[in-house]
Image (cartoon, rainbow, N blue to C red):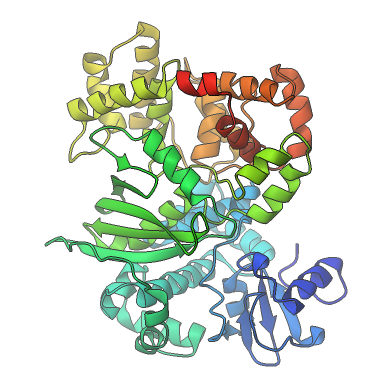
Amino acid sequence: MTTAERPVDSLFAERYRALSSRDSRFDGQFIAGVHSTGIYCRPSCPATTPHARNVSFYRTAAAAHEAGLRACKRCQPDAVPGSPDWNLRDDLASRAMRLITDGVVEREGVPGLAKHLGYTTRHLTRVLTSELGAGPLALARAHRAQTARTLLVSTELSVADVAFAAGFSSIRQFNDTMLEVYETTPSEIRTRWSSRARGTSSPIETPSNGTSISLRLPARAPFDGAGLLRFFAGHAVTGLETGDETVFERPVRLPHGLARVSVTLDGGAVDSYSGIRCSAQLESVADVATLVARVRRMFDLDADSVAIDEALGADPTLRPLVAASPGIRLPGSLDAEETLFRTLIGQQISVAAARTVLGRLTNDLGEDGLFPTAMQLAEHGREVLRGPASRIATIVGVAEALASGDLTLDVATPIDEFEANLTRLPGVGPWTAGYLAMRVLGNPDVLLTSDLIILQSAAAHGLPSSPKLLAAHAGRWAPWRSYAGMHLWRARPAAVRRAG
């Protein structure tokens, strides 16, 4: 794919039709650059549609910036869900974007980003410039500007705190970037848009030695946020998490300290949600952008629900399941290592039993109300874990591999490598690796055909009930097989639901 599609190709024509019809379904999936005005817009911008000869389309805001364009003040093109491509695709550019949004460039620089991806900085810059229209520094800079604008209009943080929370190294750099991107100052951005964006979210108590934020994170409609909250509440670990159908709360480790996070749904009519409200108390303002990125991934806010529902609904068997749960999402992870241990410990027992075991483990080994680290499990796991010796050996072995660095769970790892790294460890099988790829990487195309509940649900709905035959049938669901699995899990027979 080229940086900007011109009027001669079919992709340009498709995107220009979306721009002409002001189709909000494509907001965040691409950017329209209007060279006659020098601005870039989201597809649903209410302004008069520009002539095709004056338009170029870009995959990223950074590419538009590199082309000399600035953000439209009317449609705020960065105040939308992000691109679903970063999870849908497994190429180098998409994996780099997952790390950039997580703040790796701010913490480790471009060399650190390149190291995570296994390439030289020169090769990485060349690939990103070719694929996305901008190099890693420009992409990180654009992400910082977007994060800063969100914080300016959605929080009461001081302008200086916003600058450092977004990852800028100085106030001067922050002011210069915001002026270049938005053609206005940070203070003017706050004055112009803050009253509309803050809404009615309740503030949280500000810790004496930290930072408090409360902001809205948009989702691409339809968004089954209520289903996600039920999932998280149903799996909540006693002493670590609390939740119900309206709120989910827990602490989480971030690069610079601890955060306590509370998430509620944001929307209008009952069961019609446009995103979430995220409130948090953080030890360090430097973790704000990383927290926002991880919460977005946890709630799968950037998924292209229209495309997913259309594709899965084309199968007559899945159609009623999709109609019953439009906009279903993948439950993500705030802490990859924790999710791995919770998965290993929870296998072969009921959800209720797993919650009890995990709660006891958190109480015995965790600190500050957090789930134990890999190091803590490696050193003390055999003293506190209960159950079959083989399972304890697997959990401790995985903990030792993580603590030593022999195993890493990185969102930038290609899925084949990610799964291979897990399954080479004694006691870790394909089901665990696939489940982690879905929860940690957000991979949209993993169907756990060996999962007993999925097989029972498939049989109850007239689908093949053997792993081999179900896998063959599910080929028509690609690249959304993870979402098909979520539908089957949710629609499992009542007897199975009572058992687990």
